[in-house]
Length: 326
Ligand SMILES: [Zn+2]
Ligand SMILES: [Zn+2]
Image (cartoon, rainbow, N blue to C red):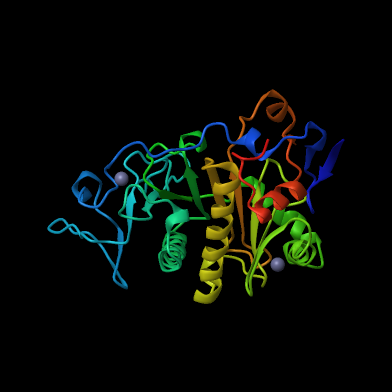
């Protein structure tokens, strides 16, 4: 049976095609492996990248100088060597491609994945996310800071050493504007309503005092997961350490389950947040990469998802491995 599902509050649709009876093993054909031993993001290779703008080391946030590159770091933030946008040209932000593009190297160790991180390492990464996003949001003419992670070749990562990226833009993405327009017509924040409706139901995969994670009713791709703070929080800068650390715990928990069920899948996660409008409710969307966008999706912007979110949540909660299910 197929079902056309409408987004929680937007005029958006996806097709959940449950009758194909796919198992997690059908989505985990090519696990992402780390083949190299080291790279320019590794500890000891600091001189092979542009100097770092922020270096997290033993409770301090430092910067590389021309004279000295900081060694023995925990998280290192560097300008992207091939930036999509660059800070030159603030007077003509569109024409000159004004903006910032940063790489957040999450660990000095080449073969470490987020699922190998300790709780403390994850806490620090979340703190770095908050600092760097707020740092760029304070720059003149910056309207949006895109924070995202591509993990695995199939998800668009060009280097296998685990890292996140941040692109600061002189404009608000139209998709977020569209969301805001709808949110402004509602008397209650729709994301706050989603927190209520999606916690402790058949799609729920994680919950603690501050955060929930769930396979959304409106799931565009198999094993899509959304993370929402329970309180109405608009952006990372408004998040206390406690909530921030809950967020890290939620992400780490879900990634470990995904790794088990889909066997090292490629994935993207993206932060949706706004500084300039309190009506928005921060949310993070994680999408494993299990198939390519094809003609129908490009034609209609309607995705066909062959793994119902209720089923995906069940697999994740039971930790059923994609390798043993047939
Ligand atoms: Zn490396
Ligand atoms: Zn809200």
